[in-house]
Image (cartoon, rainbow, N blue to C red; front, side, top):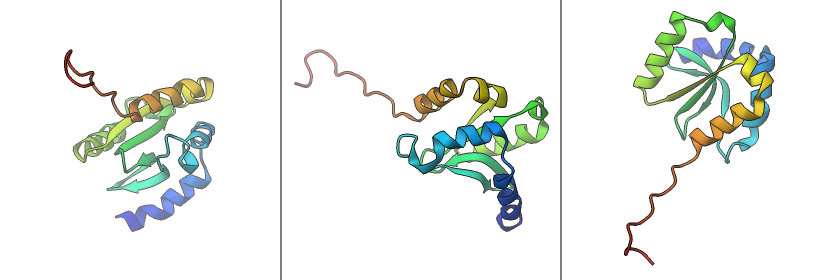
Length: 123
């Protein structure tokens, strides 16, 4: 199935929305904590907007056509069943609050802080 999706993914990469272009400016070249993202990537029977395989994170930018979309629901279910975290942002949020969206993504991708040692343990 991936071979069938590759030409479609290539076409999508060449016809990105303004929100996808803006988000890609923050994700490409390992700018996000050194993590490599791919855009318009075939995964299973689906094409996702952005993906990082190391952290198993998918980032989707959604326009109005995605409201109550059954295809998105099925894709999210498949992605979750296969170990992916799916982050969805409305395109207008990406365009109007890019830094806020990027900050949310960074927080989710950051490793959790270690718990402090109980009193009397450690140095």
